[in-house]
Structures are given as C-alpha cells and as structure tokens.
Amino acid sequence: MSSTEIPMKINVKTTIHQHGGKEVYELAVFGRYLQKDGASFLKYEEVQEEGNVRTIVKVAGDEALILRGGAVKMRLPFRLHKKLRGSYEMPFGTFETMTLAKRIEHSDGLIDILYDFTMQGSHAGTYHLEITFQEDKHEHS
Image 1 (cartoon, helix red, strand yellow):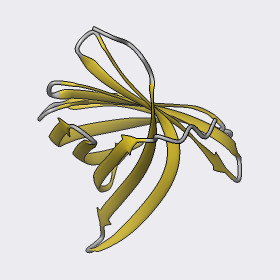
Image 2 (cartoon, one colour):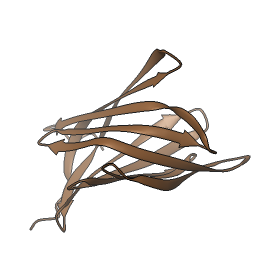
Image 3 (cartoon, helix red, strand yellow):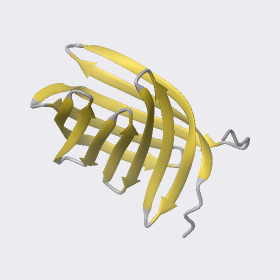
Image 4 (cartoon, rainbow, N blue to C red):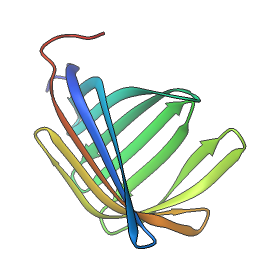
C-alpha cells in the first residue's frame, strides 16, 4: 500500500439548506491526495481574510473526518446515521458542534457527505459537501 501524496486539483462545493433557502459556496484549490491504512486523505489549504486554513478530509468506509487548522480550527467527525460531537474554535471561543451524517460516499475523484449540522445546540442547517478532485499533472507548489 503506497502512501504517496498525489498532487490534485480540488473543487469543494458546500450547499447549506436552512430556513427554506439554500446557500452554495465553491472553492477551487490545489492539494494532495493519499491513501493509507484503508483510508483516503485529501489535504488542501485555502486563504481566507483571517489567514490560511489547512484542511484534511479523511474518509474510510462509513466514517469521515474533517480537520481544519490555522486561522480556523475545526474538528468534524462523521459516522453514518450517528450523532457525533466535534468542535469549532474561533478567536472568541470554542463552539461544540454535532454532526449527523445521512450519506458518506467516496469514489474515485469524489467525496460526498450529507449531514445535519448543529452548533452550540441549535440546528445550523443540512450541509451537503461535494468534493471533486483530479490528478494535477502540472505541479503548482
């Protein structure tokens, strides 16, 4: 099993359904993909007003984990049909989060997670995270 990191072009699309409406956020970044111990990892960095945010998305079977570090610190664990606690750290405090995954799918070039998201005990909406990625033949580092 190789744990070689492969350069990727990554597109992250987040659709948030709340209060009868929806918001869509899209992000195109370059990152890396690797497989290790039966899990797939996607790593990328985005530049935000607050500073750089490093994200790692890990998927294995019916579980997933999103870790963010840097300007935003967040830990969102997912397990299909289970409520799991996470945390979201901001400059003014840490929030407790809760995820309930309704779908976790992973195939070549796609990670698809549909989940209910709760922050500090209040429902923040249903989030649909679609991450598509393909090998980047031209290294951008």
